[in-house]
Image (cartoon, rainbow, N blue to C red):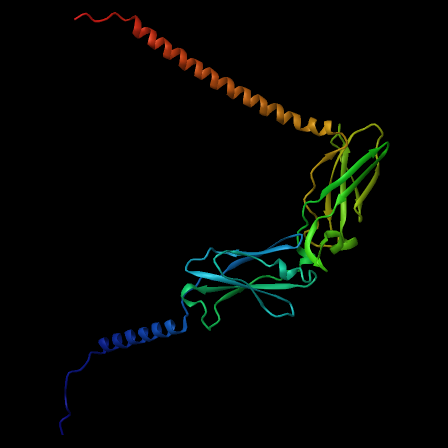
Length: 292
């Protein structure tokens, strides 16, 4: 019995057809599940000073948005900064609830066309952050000072934080207690040699030379920390305002001299141009008239 014959599809064409069909199925599945390419957040960084805490990350979003979640080590995740195009999120209100707790954050990336979808979007975890051990100390201020004879008394003003107890914002001293120290750097106004004193209170009382003017500033420090131990130094104060002015005077003199020099140059150029213009007009007036 003869075997029926008919047109055969070449193997190459059949393979191409199957590949195209498989690719079409993959595209349909990806579209149905919402798995579009999204750039995930990276370089997550905690920025914190006196417990004011911001989580920052990269990159700037293109065709997607971010949502942040934060949790204590044993707590539940809480949503912050929903569907934002920013690359930072203020999480202070969460971490000040317990500054000695350790926190973790994560940043989700949502495609704009998949907001509200049921699937979990890609996300990136931050490093752990313990505010009590890691928040930076802000620049302190000198509240008052007085020099009487051989005694110099300096009082430091504690910075306020956003940590609250019973509706009252706590100071750094309230939070850190005796863990918080202050360093006083002081020197004769006529000298550059510095000395220092340390206290775990807010008061300094040091012996100085009678009749000498002194300048000084302070710095907060937590010696028990491994990192972020010290704050920036405060502004410099002096027992005699004249000494402060004397340190600023060279800069003031230079600035005044520059203004005077610029004024002289501008005035000279203006006078030169006026003289040149007058000379030109005088020359034109002295020319003989053309007689037709």
